[in-house]
Image 1: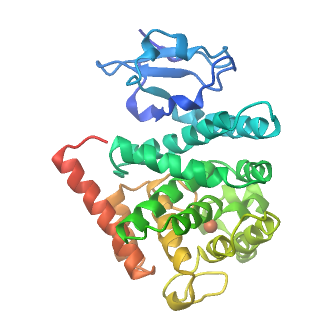
Image 2: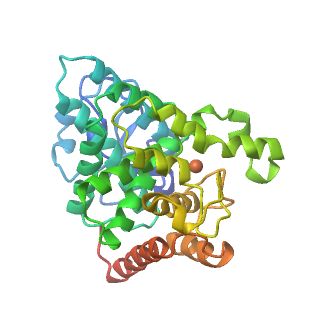
Length: 336
Ligand SMILES: [Fe+2]
């Protein structure tokens, strides 16, 4: 069977695995949904805009069956679900469960995206745990409507980037034996929101490669840290530690970051973690900030040798260890 418009078989490189919780029965499908057969062939389960009835499909009733969408439709799917969460927040008749399961679906998809890029997040159970933790943390925000509004207005694929940064930050915490729930919650929120100020930066600056920026454009871009803090001050449940993460996620240990060029000792301890996670995610994702998409181990080498490892040493070493474990997992052929 041939599934795509060009009548050519779909390739793994075009597809991304997504959580089944992103599809709500009875609502129009925001993207074409596929599953993958053991032969490697992708089979269309539902067409875009058709009413979703995936749970009634015989094939999809097997919980081990995985869902895929085209990578080109991924950010659209995430954005669609964020809008749905917004609607469910406004609609008091719909239970918190619906909202929670959508949030979980978005995080699970971000984890699967990271895994796809070669970062071993953990066993299936651990991934579920991480997704649940992110979901529970965000669900604590009473002003959820405003939170989702701000989150969803992030440009381009920043939602995916923010979620990936929060997962990598959690892996670093785990490696550093940071286990206090309230601390990890702050790291998650800070990671999700760190680039929120980018929504005030004009698209024409964001679309340009960094080396083409004028001095004025660079300054404008760098103001996203301060702008982010301004945007979040109105949300009561955002702790001051989270605002510090947003403010300081581009500072570095050498005192060469922005906006204040402070050195490691003065950088908020949680901002040190998010700073290295943010840079790493930029390097492994296709971002306007990085020249090429790198494998996880190449990203670590780039930070260490090309950038001169400007981040907090324990945080960087923890990330390096996570990636080292990833390589070991691959060698041992343990599937995630
Ligand atoms: Fe940033």
